[in-house]
Image (cartoon, rainbow, N blue to C red):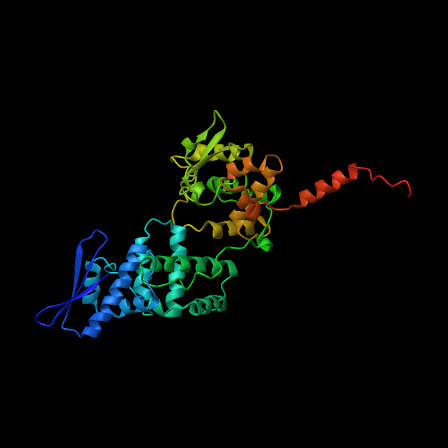
Length: 377
């Protein structure tokens, strides 16, 4: 428990023992007893939050936000709050993003979009503690009115939720106003497209050079993620003696033992690899298109137009999904997932497709089975 100490000159202090049993002192100056008593209560609330790890109540959080900077520094000095933590939206978001230098470029891009949406809607001076769950619902409606797709809204809701989880841990807010927003991305079956071998060949034939033919082949026949896995592929990763390929995966490297995987050197890849190898003077299989400014999807769409094939959605994802679907017709599901670098659950949810070949195979099988009529017919 904290106590109030009066000094002869009329000044007052709040004193308490921290978790190491060391006495801490906060000097208040010349204030009334009522004011000192109210301050002591807030100090006790902050200390209880520190000990239990639970967020402070909303009233105490608002009280800390409204304190002058000098008093905040005093609280920070005795370990009751963190120094320099911003309590308004703009500085808080900027600080969080700057802190997360560990995230990949794609995640950083999503962070940036979400930060922009939050600042545009709430304003940079909005106090974190003033954002309610009702405000979060209205923000989600705002995103829809901006014309964003449902899955995009879900992703940005999840990122906003992540931002405010951090604010809650830092005791800047009592609860997360975004915690109830749906964030799980839903599978849109209307955007599925099976890239047949015939379509893939037409696209490859219209590719501008050997490396682009290799990019398409690695996506469609190797099942590699583009650009992350394809750009990391080195010639030393391809073992022609064992016909195996080491694939380094930045997307899954944060999972233990999932930083890489080994796939067969599928026969469909060999002619394109041989062509690239003859022309290459780099350690990487793909060397000409390594700039972060390269937009693979836009370039592929141009090749599709030249090939006069359908402009299928999510072009690289659907080539990878097509390969996974194709392989599952011939190999056990767990084997294919080990090769493609995803789980069986993810494969069933987001990759495996029902194709025309499945229907034709079922019909051919049915035609080979004579239908037995009952004796009464």
